[in-house]
Length: 80
Image (cartoon, helix red, strand yellow):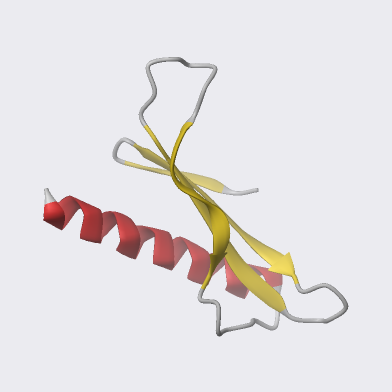
């Protein structure tokens, strides 16, 4: 699963094939800082995003998942 670091957050994003289909969906998990290096602190548990959209291929789903993660974190930063 691809990951990206954004500030203090670690983003995991993926394209997941729809069971029994040829479409892909976008999936995201976001982890925050943890004092224990053996434990990740999930601030946005792994879940499907863009629930009303499917994608033709895995790369498109991954790209959209990462974009959603960035938007979520940008909104979070503007609140503080």
